[in-house]
Length: 123
Image: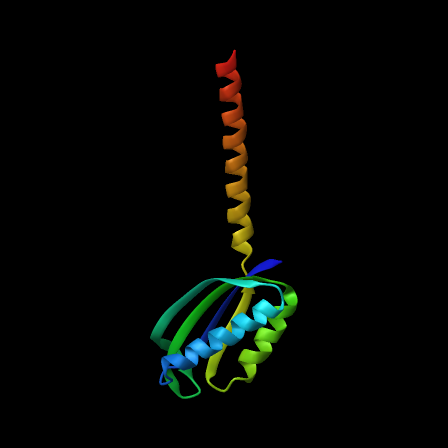
C-alpha cells in the first residue's frame, strides 16, 4: 500500500453537499481497494490563478489516503468524467517515505541509546 495525495477543484457556486458527495464517492472507491482516507482538508472557495472553463473561483479539497495503486486509476476516471470538477491531481506522497525513514531512524537511535543507559545502570 502506498500513500497518495489528491487535490480537486469544484465549481465555486455548487452547494456544500456536492463536495461532500464527491468526497464520499472517492472514499468508497478507496475503501473498495482496501485503503482509507487519512486526511480530509477542505480549503474552501479561492480565487484561481487563471480562468478554467470560464470560472475564476473554485472550491478546493485535499485528501490524503493509503491505498493500492489500482484505486488511483478509478479515482482519476471518476473525477475526469465529473462535469463539476474543474481540475484534479493525484500524486504519490513521496515525502512521506522520507519523513517516515527519518522518524524510524530517530526512534531506533532512542531505543538503542535507551538500551545502553539501562545496561550502564545495571552495572
